[in-house]
Length: 503
Image (cartoon, rainbow, N blue to C red; front, side, top):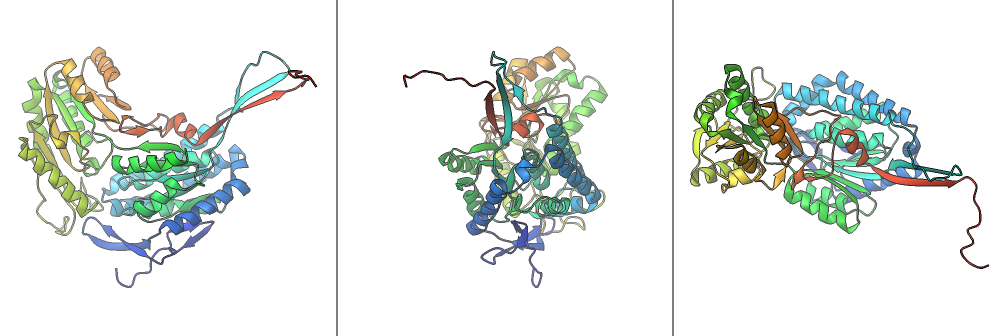
């Protein structure tokens, strides 16, 4: 992007800085592959400086000792600023990540909700849990204190939303932090730190370093002055983060994706409304944000008696999804985030077809149009029928607009298929039988299970997974607990000699 001034996107100790090396990175619009912003490209030296500032702010500053009501008030101010800037931030998120403008706006609403939720949660807590020591001379209480310096590493698909799920509870608990957004989609996280500064957050409490995971992220994970590392991303990178953090025995929270089943029983489709709703939700589950969602319902597991009718209608409607630049009116699905991600998706589809899958729709790049520049990273929503568990596309996370179809005949078979994955993030069950719904939901080994719905989340409810979907929880009371240490304070109001030893 010749001639454009790079944004000072590294925030350390209250100052916006260039990278120590002077390196920069162009940020591409995935709709046309053209650069539209330039940010600083930090490295290990920038990470060290940010951690040092956060360490000083925690150890010597006031934030950890700031009254809870004041911390909550700041979080609410940030929420108000997010509402004020909703349109600009939503448009920036759309252009940066490729999602539709409406999706970007909804993301900003959810971010504001997260800040308000953790503000309310921390204010509503008591002064600790009293422990009965069996004597009126003993006052014993369990209290929660901030962990310290938190390193927060966020993914490219929901840049601001995932950052908020980490930043809001970290600040509510009294911590300082350094956030490393994805080098592909850093812009709205930079904007969020700007709002924190505007809200009056003390210098050094919030740090951000834009740069690649192999340098900035790796250094944060291993840094001796980091007390907690929270990572959302892929399994391979998450494993490396866990290994680095293990050396210092840091607290670790990992959210590593999923391969999520959407189980549809025939009785959910007995009425026309039920059938239409289940098809519509299967489309939403698989193709929102071009399938670049960790909780995407990428595995349709459908009862055999309704498979043909259901898949035929699903494929027909998927073929009519309007692809284009996310900021354009009428667009329902944007591009993939990068050429690498599109090529990855193409490779999975090719392997599935080679292994016997039947292509019902999609499976290729769309024809260019006014809304779809030829240089953009677009890929058609794809439905692959007749899939089975041995296929890579069924086992591995594609993170693209690809839906696989498997069939079952019995409830036990449906549960076995849904649980036959190394991940365990989310899943859904569709049925008109309330008893079956509760029974199947109870048997699914996934961190979130929706019944007759897909994708909603509540700030009040914990978000996490089983198996290789990660460890730790975000959102809800457990999300706040991740950013705290527990301390037992035992006070003897009438101390006396023990006399264990002769003296």
